[in-house]
Length: 279
Length: 279
Image 1 (cartoon, chains in turn red, brown):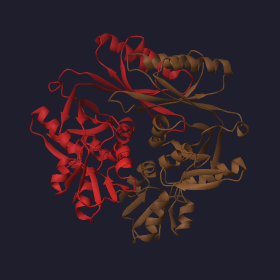
Image 2 (tube, chains in turn orange, cyan):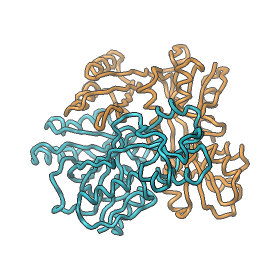
Image 3 (cartoon, helix red, strand yellow):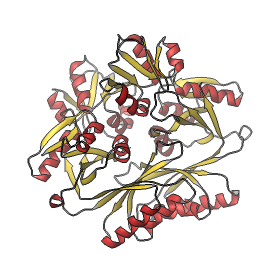
Image 4 (cartoon, helix red, strand yellow):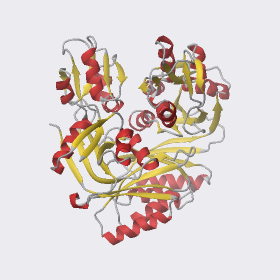
């Protein structure tokens, strides 16, 4: 069994993939891909059985490439969700040298915006492809560079801890989803969420009517996210997540009624939610 | 009069700021800031009268730093909107050399994702702070580098056009908003849109009820965008834009009724919409 994740080694994505493998208690080969897009496509093409990709962070919001690829390019199902607790560490070759440049992935840079503004108001920031790449780069550069990365990347690249848990909000979670072509029913524990993707027309009240299919049946929508439909300014696709804790028949009716109001609707399925942590 | 924009020179933001100045037909000094965050704060602190910052792109979606700063940090009003037509140009020192690395801001890199995958499947991409910085960097590096930037950046840094209008969707617009502390009523032409920011509770049906205040009165919501409230996973702030084309009293009732359903609601005001183009 093969599982794709966003490489390189030492990222939150790798730590989460190891956690997922432990949850499944099966023999899984973890394969690093350069981009989220490539990891998702590896499943769609049948090169791997699963991919575990981030879909939302509690501070910075949705991971757009994941949403856009699911909406426009592939037809995959969600088998599980992993809510991963993120710890952003500030790492450098030396802890005594003033820091002039801070390197990381764009997401952790954004997650630590206030911290950086307060503690390093004059430091420049530089976005690179991953937190692990940031740690590697800092290990290769001269003095005064620091990376925001995981502890495992610090160990991998021999960096010292300057400051720990520097994210602006203490609770920093990233939700990962396990995608596959066909959900293995045997492996599935009790599902908790459903994710739907749909496009509706832009007339007044369309979204209201769509949400009514759920609200009137007391189906709890836990998240709604809009993305450009890529067909023109003002045209949107909606990502809707709902809590599955209602009678199956009522849920089915709600989705069936909503489907009739949409140009198209993709149901990515019902899935259980796990929690994980590196520390 | 002073207007802040996202520098450096040669970016879409500068081209749009010049366009805005021409629309206003007033003597405006354009001042470049390093980040959108700094440009917005320059207005809040009273260092400049206005800032013109991007709020949404038709392909890549919302500009998160703009939304988050408006929601959490400052209390500004929108005096006008400028819908800017974006043309992404592929620029290099030489048009005959194979390209191994493509540099740009993260937004245009995302806007041209499909093009790059098709035409430069093996090229690496590198995200820098602005399209103008990408053009500058390419002008300083060896062969095989290309930038996605504006024509004016190409002229500024003496680069040649490899390919033009390489964005994935022909119609690529960025919406800019002109922010100020207090709207100049004299300058205001007929308003078309209103922007509201609010936070509601997470119980089933909350958003549905909020949208009902508008839908039941036939007030057209043209856009809804959610962002994490930064208070915890599953808690969101909503950005709602509505079409002002209804009776003033009905609109007032709708907003007043919506306000009662929210923890808090900010009304950024009603504003006219202009259109602009560099070509």
